[in-house]
Structures are given as structure tokens and as C-alpha cells.
Length: 93
Image (cartoon, rainbow, N blue to C red; front, top):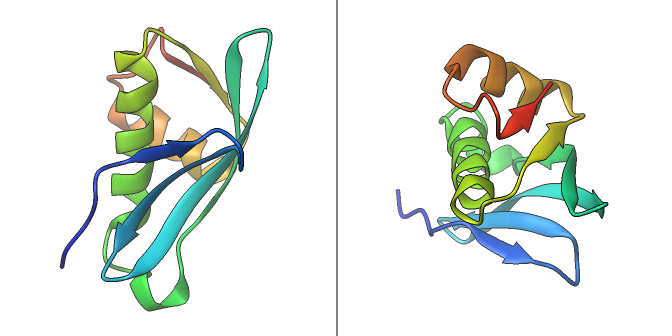
């Protein structure tokens, strides 16, 4: 499977990646300079292949690399952050 790097489309307020021509994304808002991760979505054709976890982890990494923080509002995003244990101080639950 061909998976792109994570991209941030600030105009659409989405972090996204492309996998085999399909777009998986996280919708966000930004308040007081902090990301609010609202919703994650993986196209049906990609489900069950770990793309959601890759999307979320790459989004966390992009946020951390930019020196920013986020609050995870989406249940799935919260679960990935909690299970990972490596995003303390970057992603709040």
C-alpha cells in the first residue's frame, strides 16, 4: 500500500494523508493557538488496515514537530493517544 506523508490543509482545517488514492483525514479547529482534533475519518475501502492509527500518529507527530499542542475530542483519537503513551504534553485527553 502506498501511503503519503501527513499534510495540513489549513483552509479546510484538516490533517490528511492519501493511501492508494483515497483520502483519510482529521477535522480540526484551532482556538487560542491550540488544535482541537474533532473527527477522524477513513474511507471504507481502507478500513481494517491500520490506516486510522497511522493517520492519527502522523498527525500527532506533525503537531509535536511544529511545537504545538492539541486536545483530542474524537473518541478514536483519544484512544490512540491513550494507548500510545508517548504524546503526553502534546495531546491532552
